[in-house]
Length: 471
Image (cartoon, rainbow, N blue to C red; front, side, top):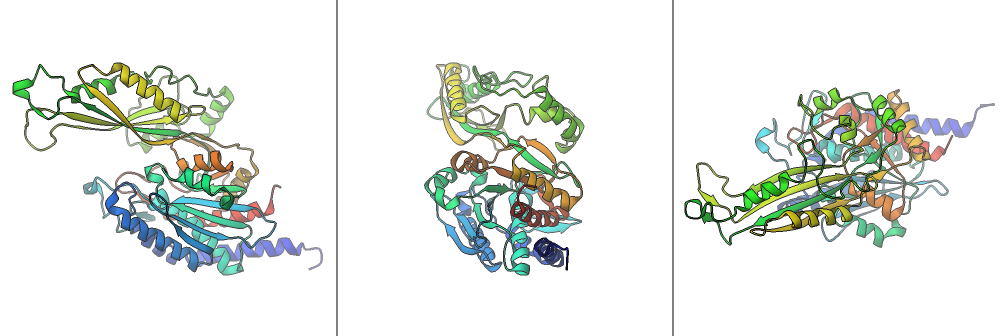
């Protein structure tokens, strides 16, 4: 083999063997993903705590079977974390793989074509709660690790896996866990697949995510529900008061009416906006993904900009009074609204919460009482697109799909990514394998299986690109 770089040849052979193994085992990988999706690992519901634990134990057992070391289910004050490592590549970089195995509630159940926790393949899609968010995307990395370990007996880099069971409730224990265990999670980069591509055969890497603040606003009045005929017109209705307060949080055009709210919003350059217009989804595509024909929101910005570089406020639920069939003439004693705010650089969730609290205190009528409970807080994420690990992700995606990935902003939030950035100072490679129409968080969630298989191949390629270092 005179003139041949034997090390490079051996490196290429290892990649090819891993990819061939992944291709040969596609049917089994899908069957195992279906096992994973069957667990109703709903972190928001205390009644599913046992399912969360069983899912964590299943995932840990799977990691052990594929050859990962020091596998553990780690207790937290909430739901457990799953950890595994393979650290037998001295001198090589360390990649930390993050994902979450908890899922959203499946309600409304009557809108599912098949039971949410009885996964089924229809066409090229696997349907089930958590199939895309985030079990399928997480599992692509697990199967990538298996493909390398079963063919070469080793990985190209050192790897740590940390899989969470509380992401869907805002990762309340994650940042403190990292802070207490910093030395155990030292790494060069964290890779996360919990985002979407722009479309089928349109790979994407996310470089920005919005932060989030979720609050529960309760308005109370009389000590108990009152007869409307006896007291209507003389007692302030808490449900009416709540609606007035909530309606005043935004203008009819979508701008948030809380004093000081926009003070720290980072303005995006015209060059960046031109890049987003050239590379991102169009208004028409976004309306199609939303399955609606009419847009709404802050004037002066495209729909892509409204959902990524601008903050937003959503009233995601209001409850109060009688909800059953037929009339019931009462003045309810209390009413509750759930508020979700998405934040952008340089907004701080704690500062914004203070602004919201002060505003609501000012506008609440003296005839009613308002209280606020904080349920989630996460800062925004901004990744340097020139980071060498982002470039490694770009190369890995290109080699698998044959199409250069688009670098995109996301309107979503991942509190764990914020924690990795703020607590550990780790750069993030956010490689998405979902599709915009996967219906995550809604009925009939799905994961496009060709993306699952490409995700496995991309994970294999990414580890080897990191091992090769900057070109």
